Image (tube, rainbow, N blue to C red; front, top):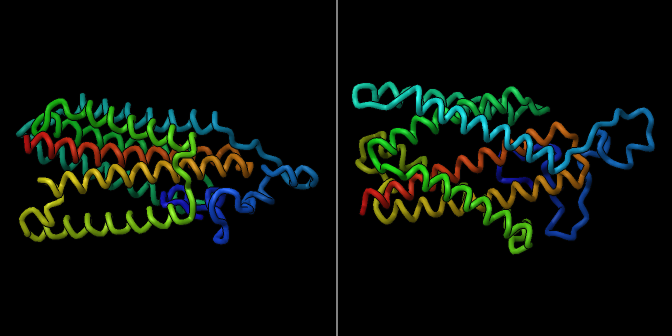
Length: 275
């Protein structure tokens, strides 16, 4: 079962097509790589240090820390004002596009690159810093703290639910998340296209009750992504994935948390505007 998170959709973070829910026999995708105990019988195979949960935690902290640091620096060094609002938006768009390109390059690389991953985190932080500063200054003062707290509340809640096995990641769960993500992204694309063509507020996904509902759906979808990410990390550790693969885990988890933060920010901003 492949994760809906593109960062994990590669060797070592996939389950075979025939695998089902928990309890099914899983084929080790790292057989022949160097982490499996079966490989220890062959002296010709180069051994690698297997990935642990500590590795994932440390690298996720480094990646998220880079996002937070560059977001804070861009907030302080690139203050948003009325005279330079266009320049600030230009910086945000450039940073977002750069982060997207770096994420694509890393996604299609055969091996994880810490430089690419941290570079993605840095540009993502610049984008978030400018957008957050703009939102806090001109749209909804104080909403940023609420969005950050909401993001980590979702992360904590999903982690607890996953560890308690209240959430069970099965093929049916994966199919539901994939279908929901596809529909969500298509609606977002249509909304942006209509807005760009001058159709007023597009589909109305950026304001009002419909906008709130769409944003809440985005947060819930992000929570589902987290459950899939946790499952992929758990499986990778069980498979004996090499330690460097923990950078991919950090990459995917960071991308999911950014998604949740932006959707939470959307919901809170609309609520503040309508109040």
